[in-house]
Structures are given as C-alpha cells and as structure tokens.
Image (cartoon, rainbow, N blue to C red):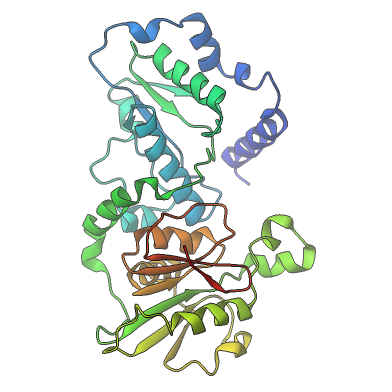
Amino acid sequence: MSFAQKLRAVRTVLIAKTRNKQYYYRLYPSYRYAIKHPAAGNKNTDHVNYLAARPNPDSGIGHQMANWIAGYYFAQVLGLNFAHMPFASAKWENFLGFGEGERTLKDLVKRQHFKKVRIPHFNEANEAEMTAIREIVDAYADQRVVFLCEQDQFYKAQFGVMEDLQRKFYSASARRDDHLIYRPDEFNIAVHVRRGDIVIGQTNQDPGLTKRWQDNSYFLRVLEQALSLPQLPEDKPAAVYLFSQGEEKDFPEFSAIPNLHYCLDMGPVDSFLHMVNADLLITSKSSFSYKPALLNKGLKICPQNFWHGYPEDPSWILADDTGTLLSR
C-alpha cells in the first residue's frame, strides 16, 4: 500500500467514526469559515466558483464514475461550474472522454490560482446539511475557489445528468476507435452477470458483497421474459451475449438459449462498450453495468432493489429479486 493509499484509508476511518457526530461539520475549516463570514455571499463578484469530486482511485470504474457524476450533478445544484478530476486509469479517462472540454481542478489551482477548499459529506435529502453546504459556497463567493467534495460523496439518482453523460460519451474522440462484435442484422442482448469478488463474499459472508449476489437462475428468468417482450423487432433474430467471469461450465442454465455468445475473456473496457451499445441490456446489482445503462440508448432491464435510482422512462424495465419483470 502506497503512502497516498494509507492516508486515504486513515481519512476514511476518521470520517466513518465522526460522520454522524454533531461536531462532524465543525471539523472542516470551510464550515468554520462560513460561520464567521455569513455575509460574504452578498458581495459583488465577477466569477463563478467550481466544484470537483475525485474518482476514488482505490475503487473500480463503476464506483469512480459514481464519484464523478456526483460532482457533476452537485455543481449544477449548487450553482457552480464543474471542475474535472481524471479517472485513475488513463485508459478509462480516454475511453469515456468525460473530461474533454472541461476545466480541471489541477489547472484551476496551479495555473489560475484558485484555492482548493474541501467540503464535508452531505446528504442531499437532509435540508439542514444542504443549507450548510450552500452557506459554505456563499461564504467563499468573493474568492476564487474550487470546492472539493469529500471522497465518495453519495448521489442516489445518478440519472439526473444522464443526457449530459450520453452527449459526452458519444462525442468523445475515442469513439473513432470503437469496435463491436455485434452483428447489425441481429437484435443484440447483453447480459451482465456480476461474479468475481462477490463469489468470495458468499463464503466469508461479507455483507457488502452478499447484497450484490444474484443466482444464474435470476438472469435466466429475466432473459426468458426479455425474449418475449413486444418491443423486440420481428425482422431481426435475437443474439445473446453473456458478460461475466469464469468458464462456460459455470453457466449451465443458459445452455438451451439459442444464439448465445459467452464473453468471459473480454476485457473490462470492451465489455463496458458492448453493454453501452446493446439493443437490450440486462444489468446486475453492480455499478459496472448500471453505468453503461445510463449511456445505453436501447432497452434496459435492471434489478429493482439497487442503491441507485432509475428514470421513469419506458426504456427502463425493472425486475424483482426473483427475476420477474415489473410494470411501472
């Protein structure tokens, strides 16, 4: 573990122990400053400050995207400009293209001489906490500031900036290099079966992993119903692509599915790309398929019981924990 990782781990533990304490906000200099300068927001200013959220470098790309999206969304909510912070991997940074055309926190601080000011975790549904954050923003209105969200600032809905995400992704320069194995004369269905680390969780009963587990039978039931949806075209045969980890023998339930393609050795970037471009995407309880669903312009079937929200849109279909499709 690097020194930076150790520092992040220590900070994570500290926040976990203090987040629900009455004194938590007072640990932040930005909050204490706002108490002492409550009228600063009324001063004339010729600029708009920025907000950034760091994609957690110790987490997977789905988690990192949730961090980035939270910063992008809350910048709008708080009336601030957005400051981009790159993803941990240059490959993902270039592939997603979210930072193209955006000002970066690094540039604002080092070249434009903005001051970086960290703000505490806040619950978007808690009026008192949102008021406190807005008071911090107002207190620094007469200064050139980039506000930095605390690591893993949560934003439940995620789809609130879905149109912006799609615009960024589909216009990114990396789209020129995209290659798909799908056939255009078929209706391509992508099924993401989350496995990997959550398999271990079934043995050690890690609650963070057990809540993500879904049996093969769940996905088979969803898929069988998906193949009978009236939205499927009559002039194109369905082709099913199963994205997961392991070997074909780990998925015997799917052996009777016609035109099935196992994508068990495909890399994460290519898997993500294919989920985005599927005509129908069946997601698991995983940010790794939820994020492609936000970018996907086709049909999506998603688990109802998930920690992020879904838009009220006919292209989004929910399934209960048994795999039964639900009407909305």
